[in-house]
Each structure stands twice: as C-alpha cells, then as structure tokens.
Length: 396
Image (cartoon, rainbow, N blue to C red; front, side, top):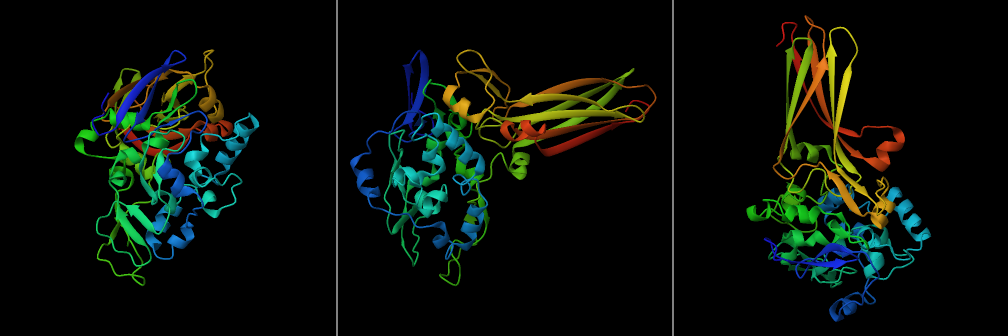
C-alpha cells in the first residue's frame, strides 16, 4: 500500500503474524542477521573513517553544542544501553540489532571492537551528514558516501573546509524511519513512531519529524571567525523528545475543573495531544504518561487517583513484559493501548468524598515515566505539567 508521504509499505506474514516493512523511501529495522550491502554502499564504507564530532565543533560551534546535549550524542555511551547490550550479547546475540542505530559507525564501518572514536559518539555528525539516501535493507538501510563532501538540507551552501551537497532525504521523515520503526523476529512492532506519524494528519500538512524535533533555533551554522554567513538560526540538533519537559508541554494541553455535589468533590480533567505528530507517549512500550489527581480539604487527608496511558505488551504466553531486552526479543502482542493519538482529546472524571462546608483543592499532575528508571525507585516519573482548581466552602 502506498503511503501518503512517500515510501512503499509492504506487509507479509511470518510465523502467522503480519509484519510491515517500509521500503523504497525508507528501510525500517527488522530483526535478523545482516544482509550483504549493495555495491554502492560496500564501496563507500570500505576503508573509510568518520570525522569525530569534536573536529566538527571547531567550525560548527552552536550546532555541536545543541547536538552534544541530545540523546543522539549519548546513544552509544549511555550506561543503560551498554548494560542492555551486554545482556543481549550474553544471550547469544553477537550483533544486536540495536547497535545499528545506537552506534552506527560500529556497523557501517565494521568497527566490531569499538575502537574508533566516532563509534562512541553514537549518532555522530559525520554519520548523518554522509547519508546519501535509503535502501531496502533493514540491516543497513542508510546509503553512505563517507568523504569530504557532506550532505544536508541546505541548497547552495559553500563551506570553506569541506564540500557540501543538498539531499532531499534530510527534509523527509523517511530519514527517521529506520531507527524509529522496528519489528522483532516474532513479527511484533516494538517501535511504531514512524507508522503513527504516517497515519496522522501531519503528512498531509507537510509536517515532517524535523518540523517539530529540528525546528529553527538561535545560532550560527558556522563560527564567524571561520566563515561569515548571513543566517542567524540553525536546525535544532538537540532534537528534543519525550525526555524533554519543554517538548512534553508543547505536546500536551490540559485543563481542570472541580465542583462539589453534596459530600462529594467531582473533578474533571480534559487534555489533548495538540503538538505531537505521533501517539503520546511514543517509542518504547515501557514509556507512559501518568496522570495523578490529588484532592485536599481544609481538614482531613489527601486523596489520590491515578490513570496511566501506555501500551501493555505481552509475550507469546500472555506474560506482561517490563524490561527492554525481553520486550525487544519476546514482545508478542499489545493487549492494551491507552496512549493519545495526534489531536485526540480525553476527558477523565474523578469523585472524592469531601466534607460539606469546607473549601477544597484539586490538583492534576502529569508525569513522563520510563519504567526501567522509575520502577526500581518507586517513582511516578518526571513531572512536566501541573494544573489546579479551588472549590470554596459554598461549593464553587
């Protein structure tokens, strides 16, 4: 079936499960062993070496500063990823699929011992800016041409230190698909962000992933001491997502109301996914949005109610999965999905016993929760939005 924003989506059955691979315009990661690279890609990476991001920083100071604060920069050296990588290897996965996105230099430049600096830089500058296109190979979906000519979304760029070439793929969400859509060996779609965006109204509005996650930010493309350019903004290479409080507040809009009915305080929380072109939250099924509503009277104890918005995934035996490695290897099906689709509005209602004749206060707090971090510490997650309503003794 043809996607609205380009790319061909092909579905087939494997082991009784329908799986989807986006090909042509975007190659989506699928579990399994590596396949032989095509001639162009083989020639491009053999004997090649990526420039370290530290070298890029000598000229691209502002862009490097944003990138250094990104999850992309931390993708390889992140302690949680390293622990999960070791666990996968201990289970017999010599070349875990996750390396292809977390440390792409290790795969594309065959740095199997992780000896190159660029490997430890995760999704590093020169890897992204050596991409010439995409190919229908889920093991190595990016077509690279590593050298002195760097590709990007700008036309007519004339840098003094290297060549520059425009590539249309940098303006398309297809560039994000290979690492933000993943089907495991059981045919289960662990990551569905690209498909969620594709099914949303955003492609028809010509709004790509980059429109939100790489919007214009203050900065210079190149240090004025190296080269004078007129532009005073850069694409935001921090690429904030669910880990960003500011980004979560851009995505979710909420309001609260409370009314007393006899000895009961009725609280209504209305919220909408106003700013995310995918479900909220997206990515790993272990991510959730938690709504906590507290009700307090002038005297008496606090009362609390909680709602969680997430995907619940089970294995082939129906056991709920609560860790990343097992999720990626054994995820089998979704038994519940309460996340918010783009533009979706929800109304949640709560009732709390509340003595007559006393003022009352209701507060709704939204948290972003990543289970492997929050669960061991007994935490609700990272708070990012709080709204409240007062009801006086007379009931308003």
